[in-house]
Image (cartoon, rainbow, N blue to C red):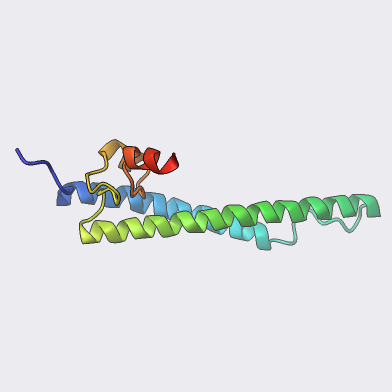
Length: 126
């Protein structure tokens, strides 16, 4: 029996559903992070002493910076998921970009945007 070179349409549809679910959740998380960055009304410091006001503004700035970094990571994750959807449509999803072999289903279910098999990933990390 010849080695399988791509996933069947049924298998690709299963992966599409997984990716769409993760994409929906990722977009919700991104919106939450974006609103955390732009929200300026929370915990007003108008009635506190000047020292506390400075400390709180510093903490708020740090919190916004962290939220900004998380939002950037989330946006990148969304782009990877969208690229995975394109690969599903092109029927190239699940094929390792280094070795050309199929990435195991278990890995794709855990990391649906994966483009490398574990062997290729480990090799690239060395």
